[in-house]
Length: 115
Image 1 (tube, helix red, strand yellow):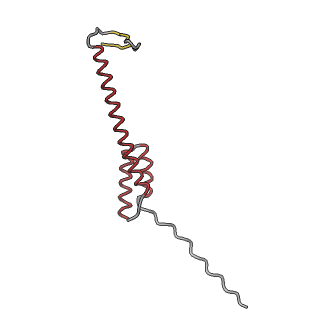
Image 2 (cartoon, one colour):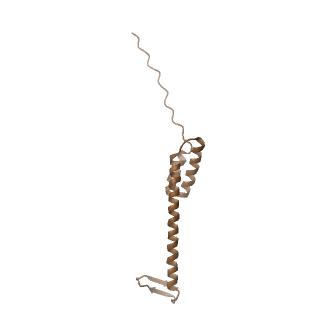
Image 3 (tube, rainbow, N blue to C red):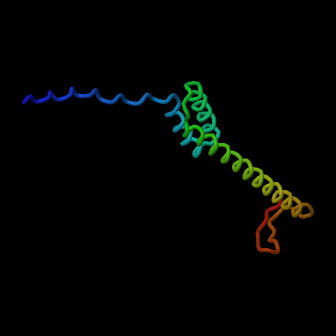
């Protein structure tokens, strides 16, 4: 009785090829949360690199979406804050319009300095 020779060892599995733009897509996603404009730019570059290679890039797509959402929210908040500051400044100037320079206490107890 002969014993069959053991099969030759198989070659180690090759590491999957690096997806072009994948690392940049992850970096873009992180920056999308921290600095949305930079995250959008990095994510768009990563998406472009992956598209040229013909492979999908989920982190880049997520970075683009998160960046756009946070940019829109940031712009809306900036507009609201700007309008609020303009309204408050206008009200303060109106309050001080007919008064001499000095400190005054409003009906609500707030001290206002006109001058």
